[in-house]
Image (cartoon, rainbow, N blue to C red; front, side, top):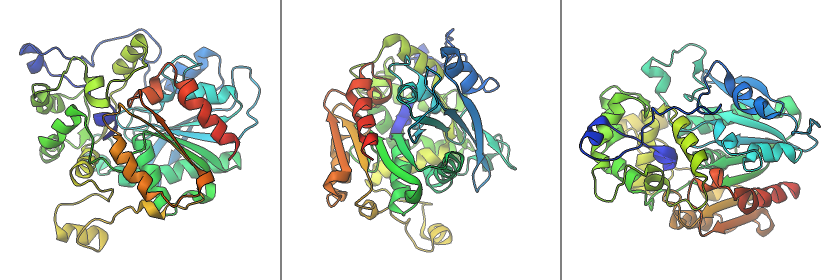
Amino acid sequence: MATQILGILFCVSAAAAAAGTKVYSFNSQNSTSVSSLNAKDGICKSVVEPLGYACQEHTVTTKDGYILSLQRMPSGLSGQAADKPPVLLQHGLIVDGVTWLMSLPDESLAFILADNGYDVWISNGRGTRFSRGHASIDPYDSAYWDWTWDELAAYDLPATFQYVHEQTGQNLHYVGHSQGTLIALAAFSQGKLLNMLRSAVLLCPVAYLNHLTSPFARGLVDLFVAEDLYWLGQHEFSLRGPVVNKLLEDICIMPGIDCSDLLTAITGPNCCLNSSRTKIFLDYVPQSTATKNIIHLAQMIRTGTIAMYDYGNENDNMDHYGQPTPPVYNMTSIPNDLPLFLGYGGKDYITDVRDVQVLLDNLKDHDGDKLVVQYTDEYAHADFVLGVNANQIVYDPAIAFFKIN
């Protein structure tokens, strides 16, 4: 993350390639339904229904006008209607809801949950392929991209929670990965969503990023790439764009960064990925986010705090917040009786174990029977959503956690 720059900044530039640096290309084609998926077909038609699962397309509009895409899987492969509570799945940065459907059905969390009787809802964040609508602003307008994860926590997450709650008449379980955990923790710390929530599973929980070890993400932060893009007027951060690629050239030639294996350079040495599925993931994955959002994540990495976006001077912060510095999200304010499952790995370059420990220190007064912490030494950042054994290592314990909450 910062999950998938951080979630997944696999960039490449023609200049770097010309210089002899082997890099991964985002423009390669793959014949699978995932990699050839387009916005007109939608996720249900392209990915879920071809495998025999029922799927419904939904949309929800946030209070600030963004139109978000949701997919519902109301039954498993057997066709029997879900008899367990709804589960909302929230992806990380630079990806979308297809993350939860990328592997084989017995390895992908969305399919596994549906086959276990849960009513599965898949969220797609603003600016991603299926959530580029707005009530009044076009995505080619820079104003469309005037947001950070602050707005995801303040608007997107409440809108999706409320919609699922209204559609099902039930409180829901939540699963977030990387940035999907960050926005949940921020919302929970402000007392939001709790009246609609049964429990939360947070995979690669992000609250603090000071110890992030990803050499690629560190290069991005140290070179102020996002800030340069913003002041160049590039408010949409897209890895497929020539401007972004040009500014990222310097990162690929920095010592310790291997642009032929950026998945490792960014997320860590993942132990348990299927190489063919990883290629599909890399072909599909680059989704847009706001450049301002990348700046916000870079601020977290530099400061080691979890706070709202810093506008860079006291006057602008006063205008937005009524105080000279951005308000901090207080993790100790998360209710002690909220059922939480935190899963993290020892090889993760983004969610470093030291930063997770800072979060756990803030949760030290949490009720003992309401907090489950699972540490997997061999796992890195992508293993939690793409690992071939994640069904046994992560998902089975998460489902057991759901059953008691």
